[in-house]
Length: 139
Image (cartoon, rainbow, N blue to C red; front, side, top):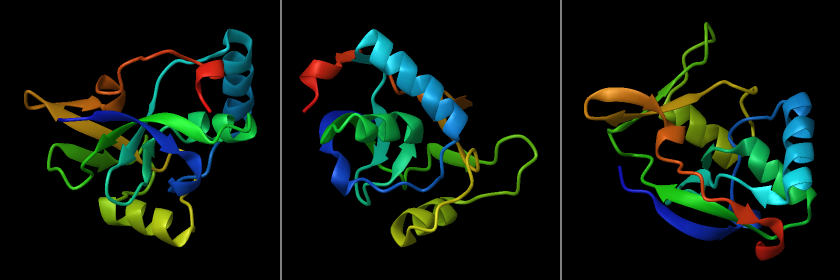
């Protein structure tokens, strides 16, 4: 699956899920301590919906950043699949986009995005390569 790396304006991105406040605090402390955003987020190139990286996105907002590194993908691709985490109710790509576009966010960990690589499903972090970016290089 093709993923283009781009610096995205935070204000144009749309969340589809709420975040876990405890995890947000842990990640925020790590990012501040290290001075680095280790991995870009994953965003649908058409709707600007955040597919993966809600906590990273909210950390950057909290730090007053106007931009965030993001991998842009085609969310309509058949190689991208959405599943629920654990035993949660099923969720579809349409549910994800509806939540992002209406602002009625799904609960944390409602969607688990997977990508088909050689016929095997892998979590999308498989295509979200680590690209550590120092915070002082992010406007």
